[in-house]
Amino acid sequence: MNERADRLRRLQFEFAAHIRDPDNAPAPAGIEDRRMKIYRELFYNNLRDLLGRSFPVLRQVLGTDAWNAMVRDWLRRHRAQTPLFLELPQEFLAYLQHERPAAAGDPPFMLELAHYEWVELALGIDEREIDDGSLDTGGDLLEACPVLSPLVSSLAYTWPVHRISPDYLPDEPPAEPTRLLVYRNRQDDVGFMEI
Image (tube, rainbow, N blue to C red):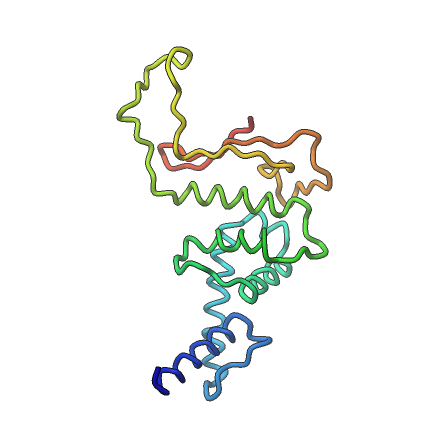
């Protein structure tokens, strides 16, 4: 690699490190802070808002300060393996499950709630369609073999994740697990059934 390409590569790494963690990684030399601020804010705000739309209940339950701190920690710690915007919520879920140390004030249901919200998102953006061309839609369910939609997930959680909201924050899990079918229908609406 020639010297010019090597300098550009170093500059790109310094730039990216500063964008991800401005408190601990200095900006590249020679770039005015006013200009860097534009990139810092665009990068952070876009990802914070994308994740906030992907995990709306978790964001509300945590509150603004804790949510912002969590997103900042994700940017600092996690190295995304995808360049695709729609796959970043899955990367955030992986961070929560495997990289983020538990923090004081974390709700006990946080990981399960994040997973549930990610499943809803994943079904909403899944490109598969329900193909019922080969199905007998008037068939007898007791006589024939029912076919499960490819756009359904059967889930079991310790916590009643489908009911959690800022107005309902359980401290203890119920005695029975919460079993849900999360699905997308032919109108592309995502819903759930408790089973």
